Length: 292
Image (cartoon, rainbow, N blue to C red):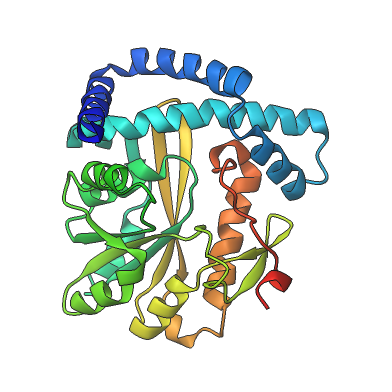
């Protein structure tokens, strides 16, 4: 029975992915109304996150951000399922890289590149588009979902154009396997570590925040340059990504310098357009004193 239901779900998502964008956004508008006003999906998570992150803002200002966020969340979810059917030409039209030369200068020197970013903008389209823009192998480091079937389905969509999906726990092994190749590795660096995995806390959005040290450890071990990828929404259904080199020589950095730098870079973009970040995620599950 579960197999039948899952088969029907996948078929429904495929039909959804066939919808033209104007129809998809009409559906998104309806989903926003249901999600925000009827179900009130995770509003008990979003508003406290916003209050703690922006104590200087009024309740009215926070409510505006909250509504913008839920509108964008609905767009983002439905846009992600379009990865099932969108062509290379289609994704290239809607997701553009402003300055790919920042990455290419290192690739042309025979250096692999570590790209870091966050759950900001349409990060799913970003992962898909990198493989279209650059000819080198692309490794996307991800945290597996609890629902294995849905996780496999998501990875199928993400890897349609040749992206290699790498579970977080296998990151070092895959990097070692590619040591004689030129590649790009993508880290969505605002994942939440478990209590046992929390080794380092830094100030992020006005709160002590546990962060993974994976990007820093890999960068300092390999010497691969670290580049931040910022995704901005130009208008509905259209995005631009801009690259910023953070460290050309990671081996020359001090402890936690890389981690703090890319975390602060993400924070600056969130403050500029807060509605584009994933506020419904329970990012702050525990404090430093909880893991001592």
